[in-house]
Amino acid sequence: MAAEKWSFDNVHSSIEFTVRHLLVSKVRGRFTRWNGAFQYDQKNPTDSSIDVQIDVASVDTHEPQRDAHLRSGDFFEAEKHPQITFKSTGVEAKGPGALALRGDLTIRGTTRPVVLDVELGGHVKDPWGNDRVGFSATTSIDRKDFGITFNQTLDVGGVALGEKVDIAIEIEATRAVAAKDAAKEAKEGAAVTP
Image (cartoon, rainbow, N blue to C red; front, side, top):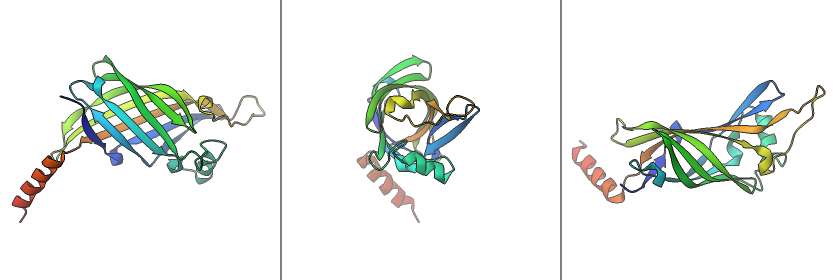
């Protein structure tokens, strides 16, 4: 089986990040708008590929003032760099249900190679007859590598924000129906509709 096109189910997927704050806790955020292309081969996952575009302005940490600051030139500079992108460059099998997804991550106009540790969540036929797959992926990056260097020195020593950013991704996707299959399903559906 060759790699097939799959469609992201954004309602059941998420792209989230975590950064240490004031040396004692972590702040969590997410991006609410993103899309992309996903080619997946169930029998040979190493032949799969992914290309994702994230809308930087959709950053959401549940605090409007902080989100506005993240969009500013101190951080993502969203007006000048409206998208974060990830384009895979290779997939390596790491064991049963485990993959290493290599790719180029671009943030604020700077591109760096990253590796995501991917766990296959499973494959199922959903109640509506769609083939559905799920994945969990994690990685960590140093935000300074992407030109995001803003920080504040604390009176007690140290800095307000951590440099390490942990990224956690949950993906649920459905196999895209070919045009001829879609026409066939529509015809069959029309035949049974009262």
